Amino acid sequence: MNGLAFDTPWALAGLLLALLPLWRSGMQTATYPWLAMLPPDPLSQAVALTIRLLAMTAIVALVLGLSGMHLREQSVERIGHGAHIVMLLDRSSSMDNSFAGKAPSGSDDGRDAGGRATQGAVAEQSKAEAARRLLTEFVDHRDHDLIGIAEYSTSPLFVMPLTENRQAIHAAIAATATPALAYTNISKGLAMALSFFDRQPVQGSRIVLLVSDGAAAIDPDSEAALRILFKQQQVRLYWLFLRTDNSPGIFAQPDDPRDDNAQAMPELYLHRFFGGLHIPYQAYEAENPGAMRKAINDIDRLEQLPLHYREAIPKQDLSGLCYGWTGVLMALLLGVKLCEARMV
Amino acid sequence: MRAIESFHYRLAHPGYSVFPGAHPGQTVGSGQLFKRHEPLLASPDPRRIDLRASVLDPFQHYRVRVFQQHSKLAVFVIADLSASMHARLHWLADFVLSAAQSALQCGDSFGFIGCGSGLDRRWWLPAGQAMQPVRTLSERLRVLQPQGSAGGLIQAATRLPARRSLVFWVSDCHFDAASLPNILRPLTPHAVVPLVAWDEAEYRSLPDWGLVRFQDAENRRARTLLMRPGLKRRVEQACEDRRQHLRRSFRAFGMEPLFVGGSYRAEAMDRYFLQHVL
Image (cartoon, rainbow over all chains, first blue to last red; front, side, top):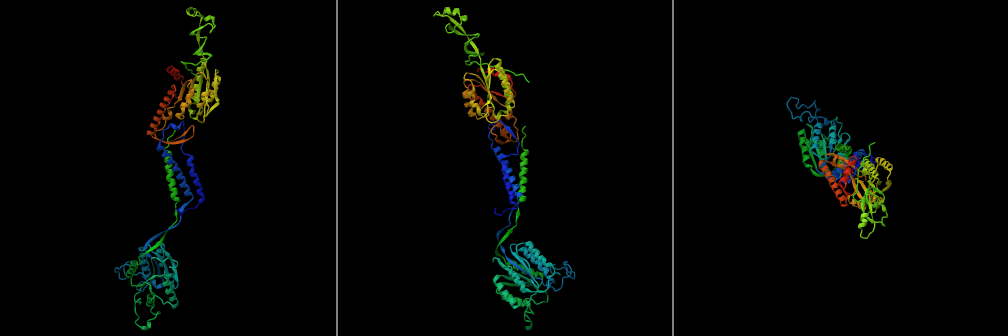
């Protein structure tokens, strides 16, 4: 196997010792006047050969163990169904509020303030917490996806590049439990999320999953840059908008024409901007965790294109295996030694 | 030190020897056994004129009685001194002493030819009538660490006298059976007693079960055997077959082998000479 490597290659010189059993035998040798008198015995010949091979193999295994044999890290090409997904999470401070727009009170004991049983998730739960829980489940369903995570607040936060390491992704999602930061600067966050696809092969589908509870106006320079980036990277965009009660939604049309500007209704304008990008775009407006689950299930169902990916197999230490074999072989040889008949 | 036992041997057809000895010979001379009448001119001994035979002679010649003289015999021991004989050297030393004493007691001469890989002058004792060199030889045999094969056996006959002698041929026959005729053929003019060292312990003392590793005494090759009752039986059978084969091979040359083992006993030799006519 070409992946074999050794920690201390000079110890391989000990392989010469494997020739020892060829002219030395550990057995007690009795002198016999004339061996030709003994009839030929194929079974004895086979046993003698086996003992010799056992001894040689034991020495080889021991030396390989001593030289620290291991398999180098390798990657295996696999084909699965999935996508390259970048999750762009809003870390503005409003994410720490519940869907009702308040700070969550106390722990979620499954009951609301009036003592009535609730659906658990509906009870006092911050939007970030709900997003965290549902995203974790989502990640668990998607076995073959490469998932990267970016966050944005006043500045974009690079959290985790595209990876298939589930543990790292879970940890990155769990890390959003820390208290949120200040404001919302969505244009820089989008630019960072799109930069994740640089130098990545175009295969499967590329998804940016934007999870936010608000929007901000995008200045014209960033807007132009984002248009180019979205075109270049061929991504699909899903916007999961966590709408707080009594706030304007994505699809709300302004009552007053004076409010029809990006400063007053950033969500609507962002929605229009996304819709005008000419890329596959879908927006979900979630007012509670149940609606959010439905949105995520939609994405889960839609994004199942075949995907080539390489799975990394980490370095495997084989010296333990070698020592194990040495032990087994030496035990066998010891058994053979005990089978030896005493010749006076 | 144990007294040396001697044994008695006799030859039915001894060879021609001018020296007087203890065995019935073919030479005419001083003796008790009447052989024939001869003319006085052929045997000018007036004391032995047979008057009655002279009177009855149609040619009117004097007839003289002549007698058969007992003649001396040369006794040789040809011994295999290969490495496989190591365990039999004490037997051989005892036998050499016994044979020498038996020979010297009746006035015969005794010689020894030791054969290792070749003929070695150190192990050659020319026929003689002194006991002391034999004692020295016997002591040297007891401490010998033999090496190599028994290739010298084929040339041993070149050291024997031309006249018929009594040859004790001692070997364990641990060589290729096909070479035995080549060894025995030059010995046929002599009266040969093959003494085959045969140790039953070699195959009877093998273990029933277990792994054993044997090294050949001569070529140092080693073999590992997985002993089991079936294999042990096969080994014993092979040894018995070989014994029969050796017996047949010796008989083909008119020699009756004597398989000897254990410590030396002179009675076995006595019994042999009572049973077989040489």
